[in-house]
Length: 287
Ligand code: R5P
Image (cartoon, rainbow, N blue to C red; front, side, top):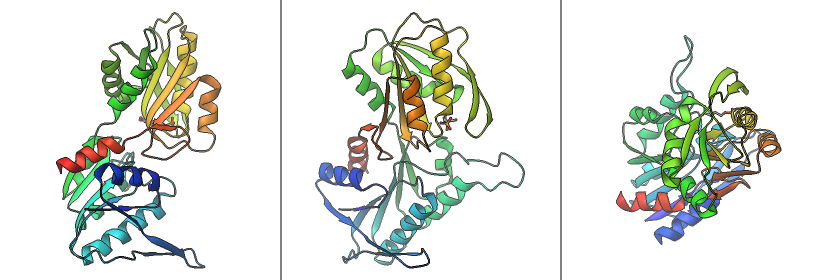
């Protein structure tokens, strides 16, 4: 087995290769003056069993094109290919919200399926995007890893809070690991990066609060939830997510209202202290 690390997930790829005790390779990337990239694999991979790891966050299109080029090369070598996309970019465009809108996640799923034998991702925004794959597709759940991280911190009687209805299940899975109270806020989205949130009915008396979400993008969801929870009497606020997209100054805005921000390394950021490498390695071993 060979692990081919995409340029968006180098550190995570190396960690997975170590756990799987397999060969690790990177491609060589050159850029032409017009911005097009030439991706070269300096090894003969004829009929090998290969895992490609590449998250598709910003710059999404360029990370996706790299993945498509690598997959195409492996197809030519008649490899058995597992595609691992820890963070699946465009995942939130999972249906046509307004007439005429293209369904980005479906288009990507269909294209990735063409040259892959197995597709693996972690907590896509909506699990049903896996139905668009025509190859075998698996979803891994990193929420228990967040629970494990906070168990080790030994907070006394923390309250796990979902910042919106969509995060309730995830909050439940984290809360189950901590055996603690679970609450949720009510969020209304006014537009990209603009939300209003209330935590009415959530009674707090200085407890540690852990707000968990699948993705943090602009940070608006978390900042508004943190403010609403403070109004309800929250003590120290900890923020955790699976995918730290963290656009612009999202992290800074969050750390103005929370004492901690922690995430997994599906996207490699300074806050990615929880590794998904073990979760992925176990899934690959099971096939
Ligand atoms: C929404 O449904 C997601 O679960 C996240 O809450 C959302 O993507 C976060 O976005 P932002 O950080 O821009 O509020």
